[in-house]
Image (cartoon, rainbow, N blue to C red; front, side):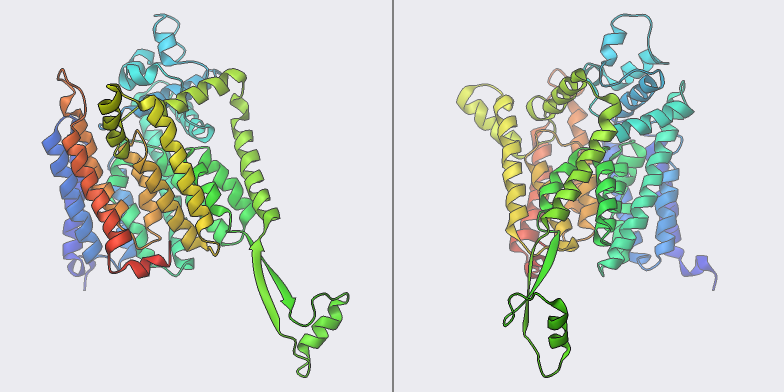
Length: 488
């Protein structure tokens, strides 16, 4: 029977999906809120139905996933303006300038001698807030920006196309290593499509050009190498992930008990000066000596792993290094904890409490306390369980980053992408739910053209009521919790 007759429903859903993605890419303005929500919900409905009707046809689902990404190839991102800064940084490097030492605003204010092509258009696109701060994108990210500048030094669309090709290529890598890791962990390979075919991932990474996709590729590759006992290469690739986004640094303490060595002792022979005699006695049926095994942390391997990551990361930053770079970079990173606030949850509650007691926004204080709480949680998680394998490690990563986001002052939609890929290796689905309801954060722009430009806290409350509800149900209440417990 012809392929199309056997797959009528999946093919119909595919064409509907392609049409919806085309509308999203080329016929949507960010402030068209009703259209935005309608298209997004429709894409999710098609996504769920495709997983239902074509769940066993992995080649078909793979083709849909990458053809959906290809639809965006000529589109200018309509939900994010960050890519304008990416283009600016890349062209700065192309001109031999260190992007960490200058703000776009510093050049625009002079009015002449702009260092890059289309300077005014790029500055207007990125916005005053972005243009007034130093860049905080790590070196592998900057390499991607530079590649775009090499191929397209005077075309915004051309640069966007290069970015998109790089991100789609990274998704190929994530699919390749993610699928292989699922197989090695005896998990269903089809789980990868919760990430690969997810409308949120396609729109936020391929559509809006966020390089979390490249970071995730290196992270998956590193985890695969780590599970394959190629830990030295795993460390190098992990450093590449850190050099795209700093987030993987959060996971380093979780590896504390991952590297183990086994010590074999005998209950009768504690020490043997002659190992050959001991082997002979063990192999002799008449001289069986009971053995006990103990595992302990392989500190040599652990420290070597951390050292390789540290050295590789420093080498990648080295071309940009200067005292001014350190000052500018640290200041910019600190802004995410002490100044910026968007789509937060626990922080907004703490902020309201601060208003009640002091009458002021206490972000400068709260922003210092919350990272400490994250650190304490991650260290507690790292020391909580001594017997750890790759499944448990990934589950710990999922919970560590979840708490990080719960306690953050700023949560942009694309941050959730890391949770989605990690959840693929667990039984938890709260991050999948979050990747659906995160679209509500874009409704913050409802007040964009009004005097009061603050976020609508009712909408944010709705988002987090759903997310926390599913999280609490899965982790603390669900009858299935004993199944999950194996991977925590």
